[in-house]
Length: 123
Length: 123
Image (cartoon, rainbow over all chains, first blue to last red; front, side, top):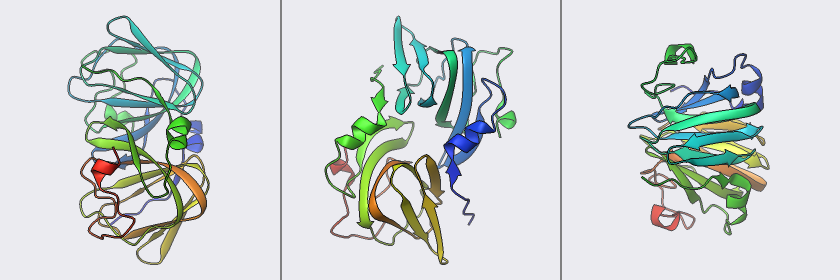
C-alpha cells in the first residue's frame, strides 16, 4: 500500500518545461492524471478506443473537432473528447491543462509527428 | 458519436443542493467525473478495488486515513485514495470538490449509512 502526498496542480504545471510534453502527476485506476503546457497547434489525430479529458487551468484552449466543430475552454472548464473523434488542440497563447486519459493512450493517436511524446517520456 | 458541450466546474457545483450527494457531470472512459459539496464528516469506509481521486475547488478538505494519517487539501490540490485504504473525509467548513472514480464505485464502499447515495441518484 502506497499513499502518496497531495499534489498542487499549479506546482506540477510549474515544473513543465516544454510545450506539448505532458507530465504524469498521478494515477486513478486505469487513468493517468497529467499536466501539460500548450502553445500553438498540435496535430489532427484521434484515439480509437479511448476518451480524453481536458481541464483548463489557465489560458484559453480551442479544440477543433471533426465535422467543423470547435469547443473553446476557459479556466475551470473541462471537455471530454470522445473516443474515435478526430481533434486538434490549438493554444493561441499558452494554456495550462490537466489531462485525464487511459494509461495506454498514445499522445497523438496513430499519427506520429515531431511533437509526439511516448509515454515513458511523460513519466 | 455524441459530443457534449464543455462544462464549467463552478457552475456544476452551484447546482448541487445537498452535502455529501455527488453529482455526475461527465465520464471519461470507465471513470465518472463528479462534483460534490461536503460539510461535516462522512464515515470511515474503503473501496476494495477502486482508487478515488479528490480535487478541491474551494474550502479545505481533511481526509483521515488508516494508520493515523491525515491529508489536508486546499483549492487546486488533489489526492488519490488508493484502493483498499480506509478513509474518512471531513469538511470543517463547506468544501467543493471534483471526484474521479470508477463508474462502479459505491459511495461509502460496503458501509451503508443514512448518507449513502446510490449511483442512480447521482446521475
